[in-house]
Image (cartoon, rainbow, N blue to C red; front, side, top):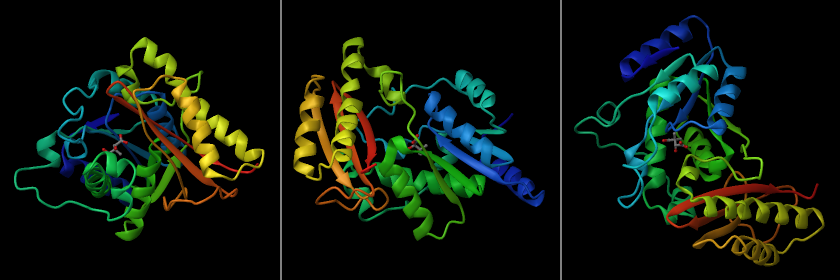
Length: 283
Ligand code: PAF
């Protein structure tokens, strides 16, 4: 595995791979790699000749009160894990490389970036869209792999590639869960042992909703009330939202579409926000 840290080096490596007829896959991450990220790298490995994994904790996607400073960072461990999972090029730029003095061009999205997570975290998706665009321009991949765990981010990236004519296939890989159902997240390390145990309520609420839809329930109010009760059983600090949307466009739904309705939940345990989601179907 090669480790590169400037845009020029990565673009040169990408150009060389393309000239040699190789397919490039990019897995953008913020490090603190866990099995969820590993599954994305393995997916990339199975689809391309050259796998680029980027590790960059992107200041532009954190709000002023958020955890940018304390976000977990361990490059030595991450490098070993990225290599073991099949990375060919590890891209580890620093902030001055990604946002040099005088940087002033951002990518915005008018609808997707301003609902749900975008409402809770103003400016977050502007930061995500900007850094993802920059990473795509640096790695020049044929494929870029994102996790379904951050469903709204995945939808936003798809929209971005489509709207800006970026010639890349966006692949979205399934959520990886702990044995008790908690979706893997770099932020799970912030949970106290008690909160960690209770956090399983998120997945339980999604499973309950999925089961009710399979049994014929179509009312979003009934599903939301049931999910709320299940989550409250885990004694959370706050339920930020439980939303039912179209899986790709994130348009709000007025009742369950049995062909596929995405339910997204965001819950706080102390200062830690946990996200989870599931596509509800009638089968
Ligand atoms: O999902 C993440 O880790 C980040 O939002 C991403 C896509 C790497 C952009 O910084």
